[in-house]
Image (cartoon, rainbow, N blue to C red):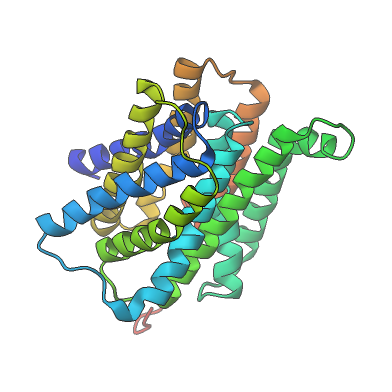
Length: 303
């Protein structure tokens, strides 16, 4: 990888890793739906600006149904679940739980998509299960034995978001193939915003008093960078270095989020958390085939 590509990877890891901090700043003062509303609004604003800058048009209306579905599955619902969950869960832990998305992706891609399952992927999934159990197993068991179960419910909400991300990725690859990535991102955010506006108004999520500067900056940064610029960097990196190297961001993102949570929110980084993260990321590596030798094809074979 060149220095420029390493810079892109570092920037993407920093942006997505800091998103969990920005969400935490938001939910400390605002309703989760207000955080989602701000994130969608500023993210869409950035992407529309990118379309104008690149002289690209909006996605065709013929794709509005799959774009709406992806906007719900990949943006509105998981973003709400993460924001709701971070009311009770630390931003660093939330990022580690979010890193389980590849486990659900490989199951869906193998059953509903066009990828083949393997023993290596199965072992990776088992490692992921062990890692999640190390992280939140005790909290989930307390869900059935203690009255105060908000933390466990928050953790389950973030795992639910990871499942939705996996569904959204497989769905988009199946039904939005051929559309430029920037049009897909803009279309799904725009669709999600159209659905979010009436929910935001009717649910009473509108703040009754002016949030602090920290909360407002968090929402603006979350939208412009975490939901706008990050899409552009991700697809640029994907085009330059391919999926195998781009997936490195999966390993860097939780590390960034843990450090930022410790620095700005005084969140504890425990040995149990580090061990759980290491096991989960090892499983992600196996699921994604990172570091595994590729089988040579015989001469004359086509891939």
